[in-house]
Amino acid sequence: MTNSILEINNLSVIANTTEKVLVSDVSFKIEQNEIIALVGESGSGKTMTSAAIMDLLPQGTQKTKGTILISGVDTNNWSAEKKRSARNTLTSIVMQNPMSAFDPVLTIFYHFWETIVSHNAGETKKTVREKSETALVRVGFPNPSVILDLYPFQMSGGMLQRVMLAIALLSSPPLIIADEATTDLDLVSQKKILELLREHCTRNNSSLLLITHDLGVAATLANKIILMKNGKIATVQQVKEFFTSPQSDYAKQLMSCHHALYTDRYNKIMEIIRSDKNELN
Ligand SMILES: Nc1ncnc2c1ncn2[C@@H]1O[C@H](COP(=O)(O)OP(=O)(O)OP(=O)(O)O)[C@@H](O)[C@H]1O
Ligand SMILES: [Mg+2]
Image (spheres, rainbow, N blue to C red):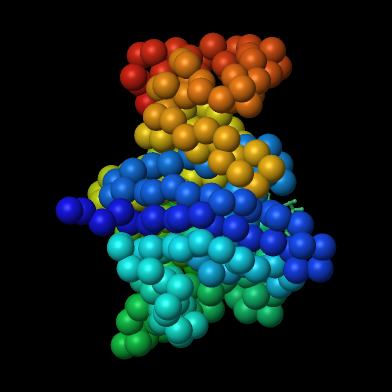
């Protein structure tokens, strides 16, 4: 029997003060090499679900129910320290709001330093600089040494997103979570970064949980789509079936809105789905 990379059973998250249910009874699995697109309207609970997986729920919210198994092991019984270390070795996350992921008083170099040294305490400043520069070139910075000496506030949202991705791909964790990882990027950079993510996952046998509003991105990259609404899962379908015969009323509604609002893009997506191509221009 093979263990899933990640298995979530009946996850629920609430806001402490209002007791509003933010995530309700969410269950799904991610297998090795699988790319899952988590889609759904704004506020539907995508970020909260990924934060719960990473044990990074914001203050004022809490998990009330559910189990999260990483490589078959139930993390509920783990100490905070063990969860933190598992988080570092088993998963990488690219977060939705890039500015909040960086410490404003530290240069980009020190953000690389913390991650690289946490994996190998024997690294020196010189080796960390070399590795960081290589990683920055991969995400499209032609001048990596300049970038390393900048503070987060000296960079745009799109630059910070790419830095976050470079840091996330330093190691080869079994699971990468990318929460709207390319929203601040222009279309050409977005395409390159998504290609990079896909290549990285294929090369390292990693799985990807890709959170996105962009159905084109989901159609191009994912094997499976999970659609959320009001904190619940509305639909789980293989990508081809999702686009050709959506299961739930909400998925049908979403597709017809997409058709009406973005006809050209919708047609392009359907062309990709029908032809089994995996490139969106
Ligand atoms: N820190 C917080 N405290 C309390 N409620 C929160 C907090 N952050 C988010 N929420 C609420 O949790 C619900 C789910 O939010 P979440 O951020 O997961 O949505 P999302 O699907 O990621 O949306 P988007 O596509 O806009 O990023 C929303 O109702 C939101 O208002
Ligand atoms: Mg979100």
